[in-house]
Image (cartoon, rainbow, N blue to C red; front, side, top):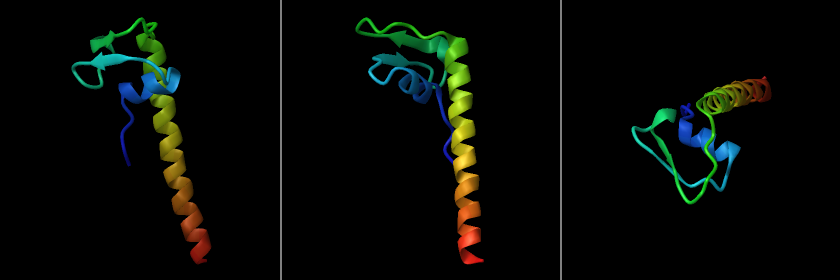
Length: 71
């Protein structure tokens, strides 16, 4: 299971965003480039949690589907 990070959240909110992040996975360390509108830390953290929840649910569903197919 891959952990979702701040970069995933930025791109989920704005797929064309141009930015750097240092240190990695720190919303406070984002430098917005090329006129990209900044996204608030609150919005980024919420999106990160949302993406992680969706991925976790997809993994559980896949395991359930596999178990049901074997039954």
